[in-house]
Length: 538
Image (cartoon, rainbow, N blue to C red; front, side, top):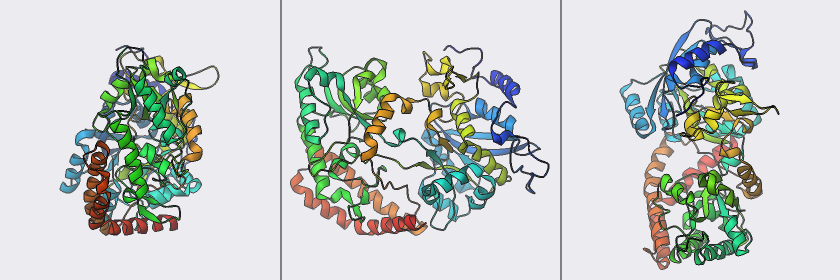
């Protein structure tokens, strides 16, 4: 692996860089503090350092496969110099993190804070009600001016992270960009369309005819019938990508939730709606005629990507077109929200401004909660967003003549590492789920490719306008919901595949609906209705 002398992911080089750049930031956060700005807590109200005398805070978090060791990361070494706050991380690999975190909490041996915490709404309410996670409301008010300003500008942020008891137990990942919040867009092979003299499809029937043409012609010219008209990975984004064409998913997309609001604003369970049956019938038609990838429901991301990079695919769902690789990515253009048989033209696979909840939390073990809040609040500022995404000028990024910035060559064009892997050596942003405000001008990933911005512009007018967050339920509601959704969602998703693949005839639809009703779907809807009403009133 090739690196320049100015950026080497080793502790010696990082320490030298941090020492040399300890006071280089120009943000207001680093402006000199006045003698009267130190609160009784020992925390400086503004500016850096956060505390005059060095302190140490223990944090635990979920480490993505793309990440280097957190304690050796350039941004944290530099941030320690800026703040006088040393964070000692226990970074647990994603695969075993939640289990280990929960065991640690149950034993009483848990850290002072959780970073990249991966807390579910149920975790927040559960551990918050037990006093393990402390309420953050007052700390935000006094020590988080950046996050507080965002919540005042975007009231939905505060509403989406406030528990039913009125407390905020964790901080989110926020994203101002539309492109990455429009999940798994539909990309279609314009090169193949041009070869056939076809336009980009705008309706579901046109989409069907396009896939049929891809199937029946040797589009890649290799003399083999190996074209895959339509594919996706096992996250089953094929269905969320189409259900809006029948008016389903009006409140956005959350995996494993089949609840939204109908045209009258009434909460409904749409997986039993007659129109949802039509969505499945349409996909089953494609499956039967070989117009979709039969492995789409089971294949992992590497297998999916391999098909894209071999030039075999006519249409696919992905956040960014660059999954098709450098050779073929320019062959694809974004498709619009497809109009369905009743005139619906909704792209429902969209996330809210509060892109991820449960990213950061402070526990009752914390000896310095005020300093901890000031430490994390920086990442919700513009300068903090730039810092966590781009790193340090001259080491991880450089300025361009037009005033823009870009990653250094060994990050953006590394011969052995993807951009995310290279960035994961100096920062924790790859993989998401960290406390941060993502700003478009500091996002140098595929989210800001011209094709992604074009797709966002194209789909934007037809995206869900009433996007729900991941609701925080009361403890009793969550306990009941856990039992209901475990049975109902498992049954729904098992039956989806059977209906599509032909293992369950659509003649049995009424029996399917009856089975779901007997599982307590009315009780599930009452819980969501209560949560929706609380959210609207907050």
